[in-house]
Length: 545
Image 1 (cartoon, rainbow, N blue to C red):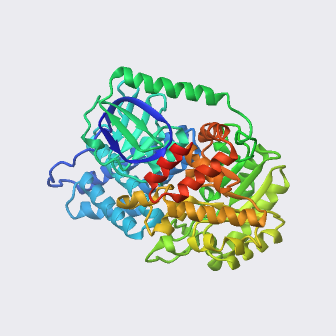
Image 2: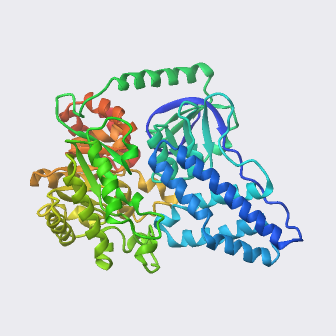
Image 3: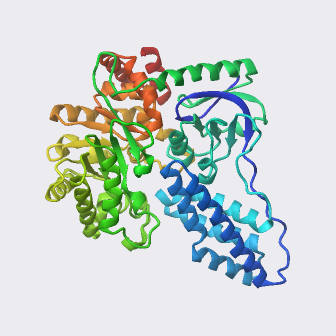
C-alpha cells in the first residue's frame, strides 16, 4: 500500500475514512463603509460571541491543560489593543471583518518575530481570526466535521479550540501537514490518547472518505486500505487497549526492575486516573494570563489540592517556567531579541527574586499540610552554581528534596558537577532538543531535528543517566518522549529511573516495560545509541525488541 511519512507524536494505531477540517471563511471583496459605528458594533458583537463560545468550551473541557489554552485565547480575543487596532482600521475605511483580520495579522507578525512561546501562539491567533471573521459575516464557525461516524481527521494544522472538543471515540486519529512534536496538536493528542502524526506533507492531497491507517509511533500513514483491513487494524488496537485496561500497579520490567511511571499535570483537575505519583507539576498555569502575580495564599491552595490528592506519593513541582518567551505582565520584563535564549525559568530570580521566594514558601506551607512526598525542581538551569543556589534556597524554606531540569546541553555535559549539590535530575526532552539542535520548536521545516530519537539527544540522556548512577541519585525524564512505549525501553536501558507523561499514556508504557527484561532494555538502548539517524534508531530498536 502507498505510504505517507510524517512525525509520530502520539502513539497508537487507528484506521478509518479521512475527513478534512472545514476550511476557514473567506473575506469578501472590500466595500465602502457607510457607518463606522455600525462596523465597530459588529466587531464588539463578534468578540463577545467568540469569547463566550471559547469560555463555554473551556468550562466543558475535561483536561485542565486544554481549558487553560482556551482561556488564553479568550484573553487574546478580549484584549483592548486588538479592538482598538480594529477600530483605527475601520476609521480608515475598512469593514469589520477586514479590520479584524488586519489587526490580527499585525499581532501575528509580532508573535512570530518574538519566537519561543509567543511563536507557538500563532496558530491560536489564526484560529481566532477565522472565528471572528465568521462571526462578523454570520457564517458557521470553522471546526471539526460531524459525519455521524468515526473518522481520521486531516488538517493543515489544528487550533486549541478544535482539539479541545475532540471525542476519541469519533476522531480515531489526527494527521496534520504542519506542526511539530511540541505543537498543540501533539500535546493535546497525547493528553486525549489519540494517535497523531504531524508534518505529513502530502496528507492534504487525500480525498475525503479515502481509508487510511495511522501509526502515531512511527509516523507512517498507509493509504488505499479496504474496509476489512481498517477493521482489522482497529480490532487489534481494541484488544491491546482492553489488555492494558487490566494493567495496574507500579512500572517494572519483566524481571522486576522498578521504573516509576508518573503523571504530568497542570493542576489537581488533571488527576483523573490512578498514578504512582507526579513527575511534573507545571505551576506556571497558575501564573499565565494574569495582570498580577498570584498571592502566596492562592498558591498554597492550588498546591495543597494536588498534594492532598496524593498522600504518600511523590509529587515533583516545577517552579515557575515563564519569562521573556512566556511573558507575564507583572514581571515587567523588557523585550528581548531572542526570548527562547533570554531570561526565563530560574533566571527570573536574578531580576525578581521575590517571585521564587514566594513560590517556595507556598510550596513548603502546602507540603507541611499534606502527606505527599514533595520534590521541587527548577527549569532552565545552565550551571552547577545555579543548581547549588536553587538547592540552597529550597532547603532554606524547609524543602529537603531539590533538583533541576536538564534542558540546556551545558547542564547535561556538567551533570556530574550539578549532582554534587542537588538530589535528582529531570530531563525535559522538548527544550533539550531545541537547544541541542539549534532548532526553534515552532519552525516546522526543522521538526525532524526535534525528534527524540535523534542519536545526539539519546547520547545526552545517556550521559545524564550515567552521572546519576555514579552519584547514586535518580534521573528521570518528564518530556513527552517518555510516553512512547518503544522509547521508554531505550530510556530504561540507559538507566533512567522514572518516566513522566500524560496519565493516559501510562498503561501502554507499563505494558511495554513488562514485556522486556532490564538486560533486553540495555541491549535496545545500545542499538539506539549506535544508530546514525532517528529512523535507523527506531529500526534498530524494533529489530532488537
